[in-house]
Every structure is written in structure tokens, then in C-alpha cells.
Amino acid sequence: MINTNNLKAHSRKNRIKESTGYQVFTVVNTIIMILISAATLYPFLYLVSQSFTSDKAIIAGHTSLIPEGFNLDTYKYILAKGEFLMFYKNTIIYTLIGTVSSLLFSAMLAYPMSKTELKFNRVLTPFIVFTMYFGGGLIANYILVDRIGIKNTMGGFILPMMISTYYVLLMKSFFQSIPKDLEEAGEMDGLSKFGVFWRIALPLSKPIMATMTLFYSVMYWNNWFNAFLYLQDKNKWPVAYYLQTIIRGQGANDPDAVSVSLNIKSCAMVLTVLPIILVYPFVQKYYVQGMMLGGVKE
Image 1 (cartoon, helix red, strand yellow):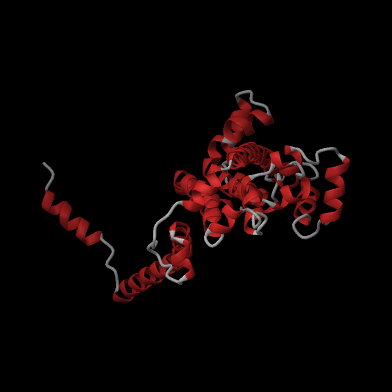
Image 2: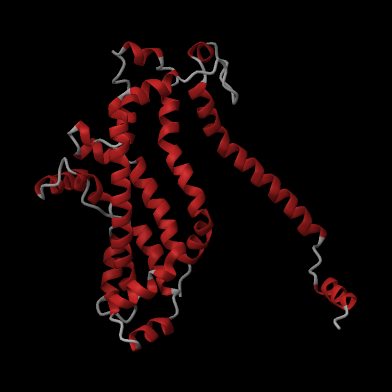
């Protein structure tokens, strides 16, 4: 029989004893993290509270973390407009299609870049990195989008930001960490290069893909500038651009808009960021792992 007393003694003997300095460091570090978290959360919680606070309380300067004169006038005003749901629908479509496209094309670019034996790879990688520092400029991009006929279309909104060089480099570093033996084994089983990428590399890349999903989805969801440049048809606007027009005061001639103008900005921000907050917990467990692995180089 196993002597439990010996096991407990062995466990206590092998347990790492924390020094006093390390314990102090842990306490101080915990306090600092709590303060940073509080400083990060406070502005958002303040905005949420302000969006539910009455106009009279805001005029009197009584806005705090607890709403005073609780009301839903701003939310009713925005949600009552039929076009708001249309803009939200546009944003969801743009975000889903854009994120999937960005992940696919970024991975297809990053994977061959991770192969040092690839012909012309020494030229390909610097050429792509070059785009991080130098671009054609706003006018050149606008002319290009107009000339290829995607202005005022979904493509005009998505294509100009489909691939981020920085994210591609993160994915490249992750692909480099995949053991070559697995890929060679796949080729021995009859897989083509694309088959190895699709059936081995991508399934092993869930952490970095989840991280990039978060980054790309936030980028598409919050983007309004491409809509400002390329989408003249109001029916194709994303919700971020619609709310941005509200914040700029385009509804100032509307009596209903004037009555809720004091907290409409906070309401707009809450409505914009809420979906991202709801999605984040599902990918959070992959976030740190993906960033750490994506930053490791051979």
C-alpha cells in the first residue's frame, strides 16, 4: 500500500517556497493590475451610466457611475428608426464576410512566407514588410477603388483593409513554430502543399486564428472611414458611420434628436462596442496564447 504520509512529506519537500520579496512583488503587482483595470473600466462604465441618465441630471452635472433619473429615451430614439437596424445588418454582413476573407487570405499569404526554403521568399517577405511603412496614399487608393469599379459596393468597404501586414507577420511566426515533421508526414501520406496547409497547418493554428478573428472583427466593426470615402449610398452604410454622423450633429434639426442630444454620444458608443464585448469572452482563452506564440520566431 502507498504510504500517504510519505507522499505528503515528499510534496511539502518539493513545494517551492516563496520568498518574502516574491510575496511582496505579488501583492504590489496585484494592486497595480487592479488599479489599471479600474482606470480602464471607469470611462466605459461612465458612458453606460450617462446613456441611461436623464437630460436634467446631465445639465445639473449629476452624472456618475449610477444613472440618475433613469431613462431610455436615447435608446428608444435610435432603435425606433428603421434605418438603424438596416445599418446594423450591414455591419454584421461586412464584419462576417470581411473577417472570414481576411483570415483566409492572410493565412494563405503568411504560410508560404514561413517557409525559408521557398524560392524568392527572401524577396517576398521584405516586399510585404515594405507596405507597413510606405503606401500609395489616400488619393491613390481612392482612384484605384474607383477605377476597378468597386466604389459604392461591399468590396469598396472590405478590400482596402482586407490584409494587415502586421497580422500577417504574427501568423507567419506562428506557422514557423509548427513542427516540420508533421508537414513532412502529411506529404508522405499523399497530401499536396495546399493539403498540408488546409488539413494540418490551419487546424493547429486555432490560437492565432482566434486572436486574428478578434482583431479583424473589431477593425471591420468599428471602421467608418472607408464608408465615408467609398459608400455614397446611405442604404449601404455600416452602423459605425451612421452613429458617427449622429455624433457630428446631422440630426440637430430634428426636435427629437435635440431632446436626447446630451447623452446620444454615450448611447452611440455603447451600442457600437457592445457586440465586441459579447464576442470577446468566447475567444479570450486563445488571445494570450495566440499573441505569445505568434511573437515567437525560430
